[in-house]
Image (cartoon, rainbow, N blue to C red; front, top):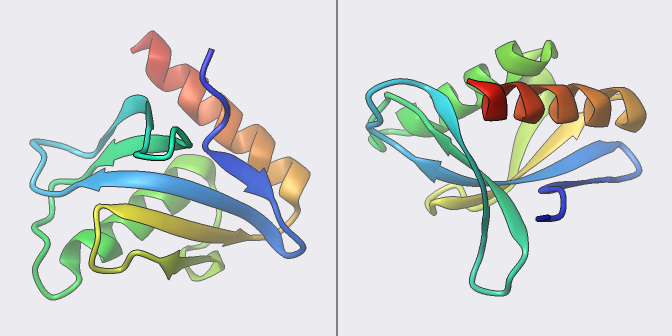
Length: 109
C-alpha cells in the first residue's frame, strides 16, 4: 500500500499533489510516487496552465471537495510545476480525516 500524500504540520496539513491541467474534468486519478518515491495525490483540473488558472482551479477543487475555505489553502511550492505542495490551514486531524474520506471515495468511483 502507498503511504499518504499528506502530513500534519504546526498550522494544519501539507498535501503533495501532482497536477494535470486541461483534463476533461476535475478529478482524482489516485496516488502516485514522485521521482524520490514519495507519495503524491494525482489530480486533474479542466483549467489550462495559463495565467495561474490551473492553480486557482486546483485550490477551488480541493477546498470544495474537503469542505474548507479557499483562503485556507496556499501553494507552498511548485506554482509553475506539476508537482505542488499545498498548505491546508486548520485542525490537522479534521483535515486529515476529510482528505482520507475524499481519497477513499474516489477509489470507489
